[in-house]
Length: 576
Image (cartoon, rainbow, N blue to C red; front, side, top):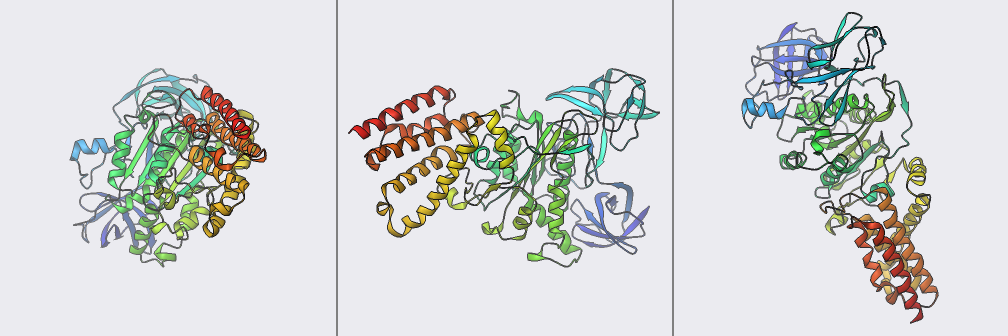
């Protein structure tokens, strides 16, 4: 049913003469701008328009598509670069140039590209929603073609191997034609058979995270931090090196130059897992700060729906949202246009429920028709103004995520990266994952990590005393404790994201670096008790050689060499 524009207030348009449902997609004005119904009051329909509304005036027509905002799912997603509405930016650039013209649209998946479809079921087989019907070989591996969750199951009638586009029928199920392409509303969760416990770690390759604050596959994490503290670099490192099968990276309201770095780097970056280009298992959603605000609000849902689709194939997906603060600001602006009652700092009263709704779509699950479990892990950056963690977006995010990786501007100013504050951060998965690390990496993993935490806690307490009376006033053992804690910070917690070797650290290497530092500390305490001076102990060359392990490809011989050297040197210090 069509109506007409009654009022225009920035990206919010009020229409009359329609009888839409909430979240229906509509075409607004003579140019057919895309919008979504977000509020209905009597005969008035409030529409969130995803494009610039300059020049749109009352009286122009509004057409209701009677469909919710949905994304296209199927082979051809990976390697794509979309805006927040799943419009492929490369195709739009070819059509309109460097700036997207209003009303322009393009399909999310190329409708003309053909794929080699191989059936995995036969005629006469009974299939249920979510069951795999066939497979397609694509750049990153095997793409499963599934019966959509909203379709009815039944008997397979016609299915043949061959070359098909995503819109052509590849199988008939009880008379229903099924293609490789699905559509799914972005604000609706995709169903699963059963939820599973998040007990397998998402290996990030970052020592401070894997060692101190691990995240599980299917887990949630927030990275809050002020400007310049390294949120984007940390998220990019996670996207490059985490052991997820698929990466969905959402640049939500970020500066254009930051997204440009991602768009330029990912197609050239070698995937450490496959040796191929990392873009081949990545979906990039770029909705920068100069794009329409309303589309920024939708970009988060577009990304999570794509992530759930790959989860339903039994794959592990890591979703990076950079940043949810810009998303919340978009909600605040739309809420103000709707003249809703503002909550704290002007954010809408439903901010907390919207954040919870997003993060709760993470999880590890048993898909409907695939035997292997899949997962969606969500890692959201938060940009609190002035680094104020008490502001509403950070506080409401903390209520729903289980990992908190707090970035510290003081550490960043000291060039300590990742600038994750070990005193303020925490992990809610640590106890569950220590069992995994203890079985798969080293039985002493939980014990050694606890020793490190105790040392860092002791260091924090001693630093307060040092501020008052100076380091020289401390007893020798406590001065040595400060030195060992400094080694943990320098050799273990610091990591160079731009070093060819140090940018990724395996769990085995992570443990050996920690074990080596703590062993050095144990030997140093023994030497102190045998009469050695603290100044002589910390001046041995094996102390600084520990840094060589992080930048060594063949690190195991280096560890053994340093271990022998430190025992010999500390023994000599005692004898002298």
